[in-house]
Length: 236
Image (cartoon, rainbow, N blue to C red; front, side):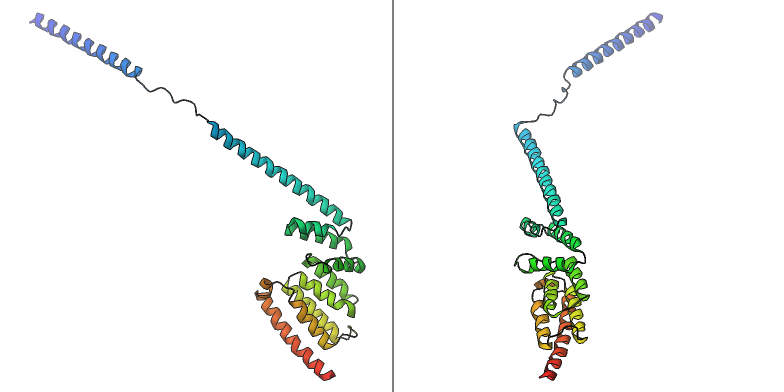
C-alpha cells in the first residue's frame, strides 16, 4: 500500500514538472513572435514641402505687417506736421481706419485755428476721392459757430455731408437754420438755404439715407423745407 502511494506521488510530481516545462517553452515561443515596436513617425517629402510653405507664408505675413506698421507711423508723423498730402496716400492704401486716423491727426494739429481747418476742408472738397470724417466736420462746425458767415455756410454743410453721418448733417442743418433765423447769415435767402440743405443731402451714402437716423433727417428736412418755402413766398 505504501509502495502504491509513493509511486502515485512520484507520478504526479513528474506530470506537474512536465506541464511546467511545456508552459515555459510556450511562453518563450510567444515572446519570440511578439510584434516589434512601431517605427518612428515618417515625414515624407510632401510633408516637408508643406511645412516649408507654411513657414514661408508666415514670414511673408510678418514682413507685410512690419511694412504696414512702418507706413502707418510715417503717415501719422507727417500728419502731425500738417502735411495734407498724406490723405491721398492713405486713401490709396484702401484702409479706412488708417485714413480716419491720419485725417484726425491733421484735425488735431489744426485744433481751433479756423484758417488751418478751412485749408484742410478746402483740400478735401477739391477732391472727388477724399472724404471727411466726423471729427473734422464736428470741429469745423464748432469753429464756424464762433463766426458764421454767408460764404462758408455751404462749406460747413458740404463737409458735414461728406462725413456721411446723418445726425451730424442734421446738426449742421439745424445750426445753419437757427443762425439764419437770428439774422447772422447776411445775404442768404430762404430759397438759397433750402437749396443748400437739399443739395448737400444727396452726398450722404444710400445706406445712411436709408437708415433709421436717415429717416429722422428726412423728416427734419421736409419740415424745414416747408418753413423756408413759406418764408420765401413772403419776400416775393
